[in-house]
Image (cartoon, rainbow, N blue to C red; front, side, top):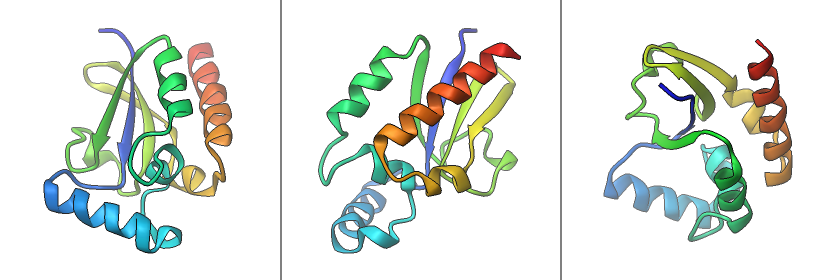
Length: 122
């Protein structure tokens, strides 16, 4: 299995949930629960700089809602970024607390680059 980088949003799948999240981002962005979403999406679509960055990564990338993540019993706090190295092995690279502290997409990219470098050294 190739390594897979997983971005797990603090949101749940489903039309109603997407509609609620969209409205929350517009009406009260400061209280929106998914900092990963807030950093990587504009009001309507994924930010182009984020799309370009993710496309440049040398591994498969997956975007997952928290209720779809098969490793969910491992964590209670979302969002997070994890690296799956085997079918049954996952390493969380960026925890919710750290993602919540980031102020810009550039900070996210820099922190993720650093975490991936550290993971490759192990």
